[in-house]
Length: 283
Image (cartoon, rainbow, N blue to C red; front, side, top):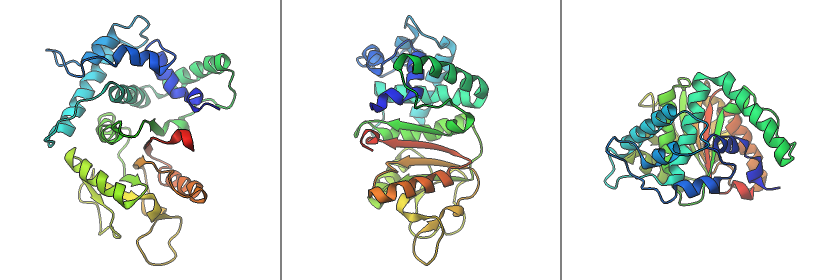
């Protein structure tokens, strides 16, 4: 089974630009200047607007491009070394813009379009393992991107994208990592991007300091129900609608993976998840 064949949402996004495979869209953008013209528009969007089989309005594309430019400025405000998006990072963020905009403003239409696409796609690819999309399937976006490709920066911009579209007002903001070393890395990087954050170090010490503050915590610190002292937290600590960013949340001993997945799903039950991994193809 080739996993890429079953990534229906990805294939739907590609179809909006007139392509069936990512490599064909890659050829259009990979050698494009990653900066901006005199009007502040990216050269990426200029290339996309010129595509022959484009199935998304030019006005929407320009609006999304303007948004992405704004997010990049936000994460660069405190950085000495400024971020410039590579074409694949731009596309990941552009696909996210399309998704969040439609989820917020045209949810029923989005579901209908996805299912119409899925019907055609299943016949063409001769697959039957994918069920129709429902509203419950639209609570998570997963980014499968190679190690070193800048998924941390994508996560930071996803934070700003979420607030731009205001899907809901989260009760908690959690950045879930596989271990303490990765947590510390995210803590330093989030600060560079101007995102309020703090590390979980065994105690919550009351309320978070900022209404949009991100708590960085390892997946290993969560338990279904706390039975003794220590640094673990029961999942019901984070009641309500939560916004989760999950970095390689599936890593660990095989016997623990399903347990962690269940805990993550419980925390995110009424909220939304952005998840990132370089290794989905190996699990």
